[in-house]
Length: 76
Figure 1 (cartoon, rainbow, N blue to C red):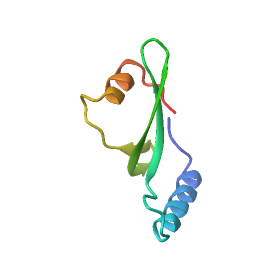
Figure 2 (tube, rainbow, N blue to C red):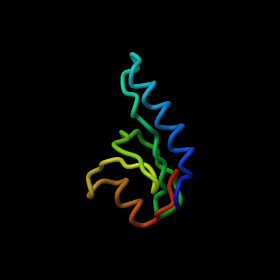
Figure 3 (spheres, one colour):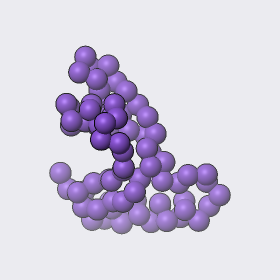
Figure 4 (tube, rainbow, N blue to C red):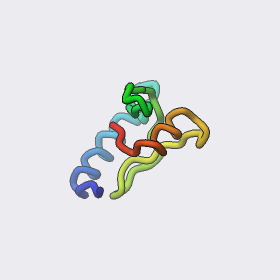
Protein backbone atom coordinates (compact mmCIF):
# COMPACT_ATOMS: atom_id res chain seq x y z
CA UNK A 1 0.00 0.00 0.00
CA UNK A 2 1.35 3.42 -0.83
CA UNK A 3 0.25 6.74 0.57
CA UNK A 4 -0.50 9.55 -1.91
CA UNK A 5 2.31 12.16 -1.89
CA UNK A 6 -0.06 15.01 -1.01
CA UNK A 7 -1.23 13.16 2.10
CA UNK A 8 2.36 12.58 3.21
CA UNK A 9 3.21 16.24 2.59
CA UNK A 10 0.21 17.41 4.61
CA UNK A 11 1.01 15.02 7.46
CA UNK A 12 4.67 16.07 7.48
CA UNK A 13 3.63 19.73 7.59
CA UNK A 14 1.34 19.08 10.56
CA UNK A 15 4.05 17.05 12.31
CA UNK A 16 6.59 19.84 11.76
CA UNK A 17 4.15 22.35 13.26
CA UNK A 18 3.50 20.09 16.25
CA UNK A 19 7.25 19.70 16.84
CA UNK A 20 7.54 23.48 17.26
CA UNK A 21 4.97 23.54 20.06
CA UNK A 22 5.24 22.60 23.69
CA UNK A 23 3.56 19.24 23.15
CA UNK A 24 5.39 16.68 25.31
CA UNK A 25 5.78 14.11 22.50
CA UNK A 26 4.48 15.16 19.08
CA UNK A 27 5.54 11.88 17.45
CA UNK A 28 3.42 9.73 19.78
CA UNK A 29 0.85 7.63 17.95
CA UNK A 30 -1.53 4.85 18.88
CA UNK A 31 -1.12 1.38 17.38
CA UNK A 32 -3.86 -1.24 17.56
CA UNK A 33 -3.26 -4.93 16.82
CA UNK A 34 -5.17 -8.12 17.64
CA UNK A 35 -4.28 -11.23 19.56
CA UNK A 36 -4.84 -14.55 17.73
CA UNK A 37 -8.17 -14.80 19.60
CA UNK A 38 -9.26 -11.53 17.99
CA UNK A 39 -8.99 -9.51 21.19
CA UNK A 40 -7.68 -6.01 20.36
CA UNK A 41 -4.55 -4.61 21.94
CA UNK A 42 -3.70 -0.90 21.84
CA UNK A 43 -0.53 0.92 22.87
CA UNK A 44 1.37 4.14 22.25
CA UNK A 45 4.47 4.03 20.03
CA UNK A 46 6.72 6.77 18.68
CA UNK A 47 6.81 7.66 15.00
CA UNK A 48 10.40 7.50 13.73
CA UNK A 49 9.94 8.10 10.01
CA UNK A 50 7.40 8.22 7.24
CA UNK A 51 7.66 7.63 3.52
CA UNK A 52 5.52 6.48 0.60
CA UNK A 53 5.27 3.00 2.14
CA UNK A 54 3.83 4.22 5.43
CA UNK A 55 4.75 5.07 8.98
CA UNK A 56 7.82 3.64 10.73
CA UNK A 57 8.14 2.97 14.45
CA UNK A 58 10.73 0.98 16.36
CA UNK A 59 9.89 -1.91 18.63
CA UNK A 60 11.46 -4.90 20.30
CA UNK A 61 11.09 -7.85 17.92
CA UNK A 62 10.24 -10.08 20.87
CA UNK A 63 7.47 -7.82 22.12
CA UNK A 64 3.78 -8.66 22.19
CA UNK A 65 3.04 -6.12 19.45
CA UNK A 66 5.72 -7.67 17.21
CA UNK A 67 4.26 -11.13 17.68
CA UNK A 68 0.75 -9.84 16.99
CA UNK A 69 1.88 -8.03 13.81
CA UNK A 70 3.80 -11.13 12.68
CA UNK A 71 0.71 -13.31 13.19
CA UNK A 72 -1.77 -10.76 11.78
CA UNK A 73 -0.26 -7.89 9.75
CA UNK A 74 -3.50 -5.87 9.81
CA UNK A 75 -3.17 -3.01 12.29
CA UNK A 76 -4.66 0.42 12.88
